[in-house]
Structures are given as structure tokens and as C-alpha cells.
Image (cartoon, rainbow, N blue to C red; front, side, top):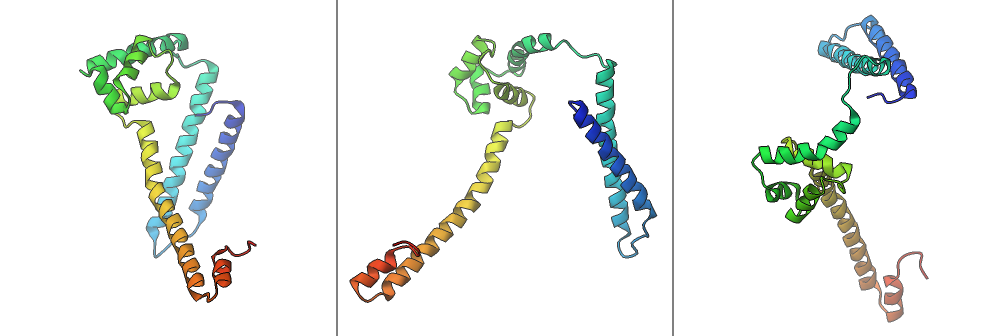
Length: 190
């Protein structure tokens, strides 16, 4: 979504560049061994052009006042009520919602008792996503972090194990106590 004039100008420039690229692509010779490649390139460019044009049209409509938007104050004030009503309509009690969010039941009770007054936008988004049957955004982020952790820790572990092995080898090769002490020290330290 375009949110200001600067982004609008940049998007228009990108649209012009993609349109020119599409025109140049049609002038290129066919690829005999991979005819599908040119089709894929053309379809990708067309999709990018369509997305950029949609963003530009939306921004222009908003700016001209053509789009009838709901009152933002009303929307914000109704959000807590909509969340509570959605939970009830799903047949969930506060404990069920809390479980699905990985929170304590008491936290949901406090949020609802105060009409989510102390809840952050992040919490409101999480509650709304879970009530809408979508994955919890925070849980997805945590899962992505978990996916990357084992790899980085195993690399760290391997490096650490390799260093320990090198130290053992140096110490084993040393013959006097002074040489063993020197071998244990890291290279470059005195």
C-alpha cells in the first residue's frame, strides 16, 4: 500500500520501468530450447505491473476522496467488543482463547474486563487472527526462529568441538609442563 507522495512517485517510476521492460522483452528473440522461459518472464512482468497499477489506483482513489471509509474512531472503539463477540460466537470460553494464544486464562480475563485497553496492537492482531481461524502471527515468527536456531547452534557447536580437539592435539604433542601450558593458551594470547 502506498502511504505518501514519495512512495507514490517511486511506484509510478517502477511501473514505468516494468512497462518498458515488458516492451523490450517482446522484442527479444525466442529461446528455442526453453520457450516457456520467455512466457514465464512475460507473465511475471505483467503480474508486477498489475500489482503496481492496483496500488497506484488505490492511492489515487483514497486521495481524491472517492473511497468511503468507515469512521476510524468507531472502528477502534468497536474492536474490543468485536473480539469478545467473536470469541463467544465461536463457542470458546476465555480459557480456550488463551490456550490457542499460548497465554494464561487470567490474561484474557484482564484484557476483556478492561475492553483490551492495555493490549498492544500486536496482541489485538494475534487475537483477531486466531479468532478468524488464521495462524497466530507470533507463533509463526517463533517457529521461524526455532527453524534457524538448530543450524546456527550446531555450526557453533562444531566449531567449538573442533577448537577443543585442536587444543587436545597440541597439549598431547607437548612434552614438558611448560610446553603443555603454552599449548593450552589460545593462539595470539600471551
